[in-house]
Length: 157
Image 1 (cartoon, rainbow, N blue to C red):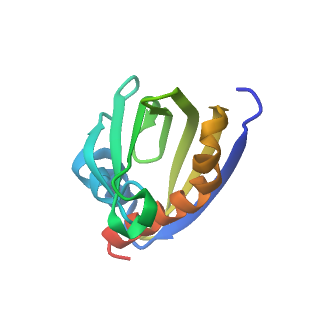
Image 2 (image 1 turned 90 degrees about the horizontal axis):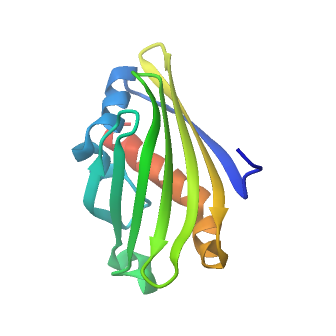
Image 3 (image 1 turned 60 degrees about the vertical axis):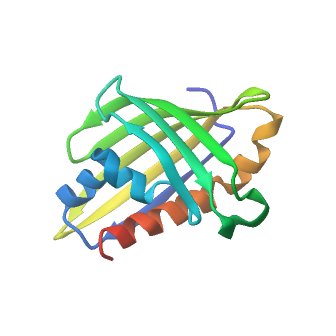
């Protein structure tokens, strides 16, 4: 992989066993509940977590996001690696009806048991982007942190 345009890693410890956290990443109905930053819902959430499995999520900005309310942010992707209970790797892309591809990313999720809790490390890397991607790139780390907050809340912690 070439040098990423932007990359960061988010680490959290969730007060839930590894299997419970893993299932939150495996079940499309659960992913639909926590995916995206606060104020975003996912009217479309197709999530097939197996090598070569497809991802299609359409995030919808709610009224709490002010001027962005009503905007739809589609994401497509494919799972590259799925190692039960410990690791997910997927490539994804965001597109726009006007300009087409806006950005491509690679996400690696590692889960490690810590007693009866689970440490999660999410590495996010933007691998390709056009000028329209600036807003998404600037907000990516904040968005992923918000998304991990929502996952933690769903897991009961």
